[in-house]
Image 1 (cartoon, rainbow, N blue to C red):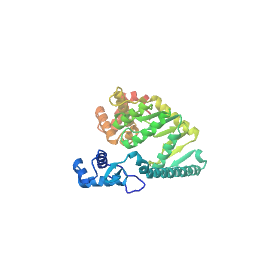
Image 2 (tube, rainbow, N blue to C red; image 1 turned 90 degrees about the vertical axis):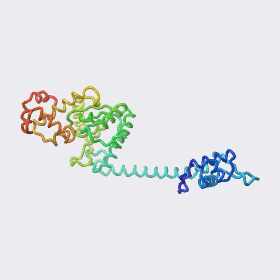
Image 3 (cartoon, one colour; image 1 turned 180 degrees about the vertical axis):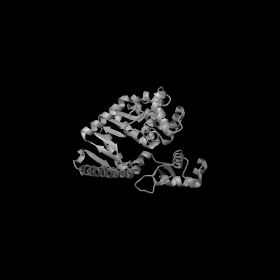
Image 4 (spheres, rainbow, N blue to C red; image 1 turned 90 degrees about the horizontal axis):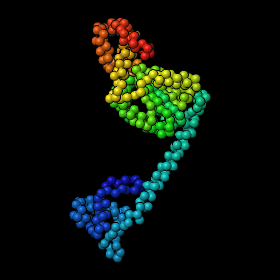
Amino acid sequence: MNESKDPSVPPYFGEDDILVYGWILDGGGSRADRAASELGLTPERAAAALERLWSLNLIRTVSPRPGEITAVDPDAVADALTAPLRDSIRRQEEHLERIRGGIGLLRNRFLNRRPGGDDSAVDVIPTLEEVRAALNRASAECREEVVSSQPGGNGRIPEAMEEALGRDHALLSRNVRMRTLYHHTARFNGPSQAYVAAATALGAEYRTSHELFGRLIIYDRSLAFLPDRNGSWGAVAVREPTVVQYLYDIFEQYWTQATPFSDAAQHGLEQVAKEIHSTIVLLLAAGLKDEAIARRLGMSLRTARRHIADIMGDLGAESRFQAGVLAAQSELVNRSQSGVRG
């Protein structure tokens, strides 16, 4: 049995203790060797269990027969055994409340340090930890709607997705509407499919598009988060109403033209694949490099190059330049012009 060295934490009982206590309760006696023989324990384990039961006042001698012991009702000693732990919990809760109170005061001071205080129009958030704190705070305060654009469909970390699902569950449980845009490539990604299925069951809405305008989160049409321009893990929080509304209108335009999310096993995937193919053809014709095409479509460079190689083969092109010329002349480009943004 494991025992804590902290005197404020009462011990917990192992299998040996339960066996020996029951043996005594049934009139087995008080000798460790006999307990070991009848219970199939080693003498050392039986003796240790008896010692622990004695120290916890769970067994006692029977007066006036000092050689005889009996089991004590556990409820009679429960308060004494748990009192140190309850006292420890109370002290920890008091400590926790003091920390929370201090954090609240620090938060107010932190927010008020900026020009304009908590209503500052633009706030640069430099680190990932501070970005996560700001997002958690915005999620907790959100009351009506959160919309987001999440470019890329692959490589999302399962642990991060699990954390995000917990945050989304808290929002949806308050009847906050949640809408998210992904790239079409998310439909081919297993973790993304599982995440969308779980969140959709809670009431969230998801759509995908062949191209997106960038990463964006907007809470209650009043607070928008944009990625830092340097490509770091930082972000920029925007509260200026005109700018936030402008960003929200962009989201709405893309949302209207996007396709409801479905996983790779459902109908509509063929059409999605055609949209991706058509977009790559158009971007090739525009002279974009492989890296830029991959970034625009939210796919890995390797996947983008595989698509490009297939397209060059279909066009019979021997070079990227020739592929661009042939693509610009093809009917496929003409058919995709109306549905693809430059």
